[in-house]
Length: 68
Image (cartoon, one colour):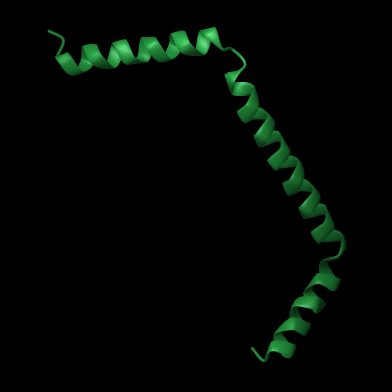
């Protein structure tokens, strides 16, 4: 026997699937944001690798200047 909760859960899941089928591009916005985040992460990593010593010296200079 199915409980009321399991029937409710199946109905809700069917509604969500039907909504996604009506708007198939709904996931593209999320994928686009994830790709942009990946690009930004890669660019920051490359810049950090290129200017590693300068960034470290800058951070050490701040530490000495601020008295930490």
